[in-house]
Amino acid sequence: MSRIKVALIGNCQVQSYRALLPFMVDRELDLVTFDASEPSSREEQIQLKFLEQLADRDIILAQRINFHHINDEKLRAAYPGRVLTIGNFYFRGLHPDHCYVGDFAHRLDRPSTVHSVVILDAFRRGLSQDAAIQAFTPETFERLGLFAAWQSSIDEMATRERNGFIDVPCLALMEAACRRMPAFLTMNHPSNVLLADYLEIALKAAGIPCHPVNAAALPDPLDHHDRFPILDLVAEHFNLPYRTAQRWKINALGSTRFVRLDELVAAFYQSYSEAAPASLAVHSPTDLVRNLRGQPDHAYLIDTTIAPPPASLSAPAAESQVPGTPHQDHALRAILAEQNRPVLQAVEEIRTYIHKVHSFMEVADPKIESLTQTLPAAEEIRTYIHKVHSFMEAADPKIESLAQTLPELARKADLPSQNRGVIKRMLRRIKPGE
Image (cartoon, rainbow, N blue to C red; front, top):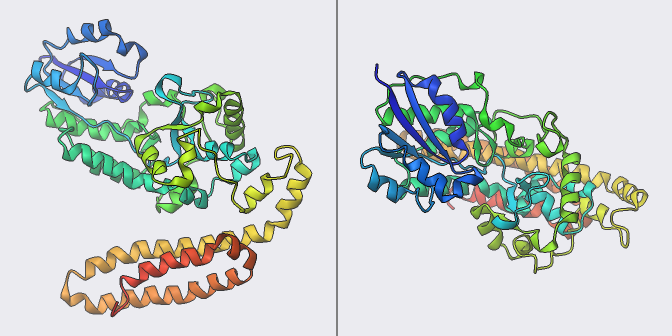
């Protein structure tokens, strides 16, 4: 059987495709690759040398990149009928707090090129490391608009497919994989399993005989990079059926060990304290920057000339804002933490109830919407509405009771009434006569 000559062009994801292809293609393989994540890929001579290898390729699988000599337009013009554009997987939904700090020429890469906007936000607002650790809560993610990352990532990929930037669609596969398994190691490092599933689809689209492979049993080429967990609070928010260990593999902190959150925060705090203040701004990804720009209260995270607002009056913030000695008076902070323990416990209980309501509504709403499409389903619709109302009748007084035990918290944060307002707006869509 004759050899098949394939070229792969793209970012670091090419490393995984390069490792997977020999296990999947049914013919002898002649493969050349161009990895745009390599610093040398910017050099003109490197690009021209690679282009010399494309003349006899049977198929060119290319992510959309925009180098001077290597880009979609020039590749299609030079090799008509042989170029198949594939998706550049990017999904921040599983890692909503991921970001890059500093512009491209001055990007902060210590202890990792991938930063957490939660840690940066805490540092910029002058919070202690303890408070930064405590900031990893659903409330912080809501305040910073981070849970919007799932939909914004979906929208971005949908736009690419809709505009014809991708010949082999990948959106449906990507979202289904994220719902089923930890499909991303970071926001732009997909797992071997996801890439193997997609590569099989791309090869078949190119007419190349291939077969599936158990990618989970193969070494993952992207595994040598820094790896981040999918936070439990994220998995809970999106009702994901899996959990990952809450540890981080940061090569700069030891490539053979996984660190705890407190170690991660300490390393980033040290890096930020040594960096030029002007560099401490989120530069990308684009959807996160756009989201922060649309929230005036958070503009300081993308513009260091804007002063951050005073820390909120939440318990973690109060713990860190000790006048004069915010990072040193541990004894006073401990006293404040103990005084606030009942408040924290009550807030957690409120959050649990609200989460249960939201989870119930996420299940009930699509069901009701589906049932309304068929007239014979009227009785089943009424049953579902009754279940929703019954659940709310049980949950609402509990939230109200908790709120009444915390008048000071309610006055400062308006947490219960604020969330109950959201719940009631959801209910209004299905209440009879409204």
